[in-house]
Image (spheres, rainbow, N blue to C red):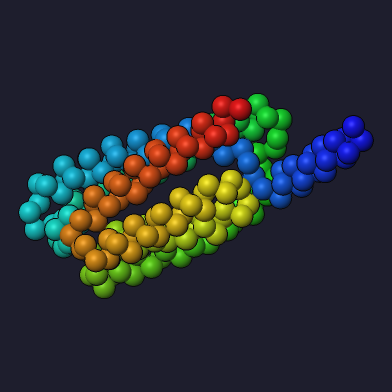
Length: 207
């Protein structure tokens, strides 16, 4: 009996240490919704690009048409805002339910380690566009987003690391299949988010 109690105490201490060093209130459902938004955004982007035979991430080229760039930018901003708002709302809801703080030391570390590779990748993609190497933007965004997930995974659920690895592999494959960037975006930011979001939801959120 004493041995069992000792093991239970050790297990509880390990759980407490894990909770103090990792932000575990990420909502799997927010990942699912982010994937849905991404698929909707990819569909809208495809509709915009299909009207311009000479301007497409699908064909691997980009025409300097301000209206096309503006529409794609608005779609991207809309998808990002929807994903961020949903993520914050659902994470707050999960944090409140589990009695944990949403904004603490571990969540700050998570955000910092996620943003460094992500913002670096964003700056790199702007340079690619500046030098008219737009066909590498799609694989670059996938790779840097994957690196951001891997870098932040040590401060949150371990499954995020595997999602990051999947994004990096997908981005590298995309470098060899130039001309299908929009499809790879839809697969990564859409399908991968839905799959891993659902996995984390059933694994953690429903406990």
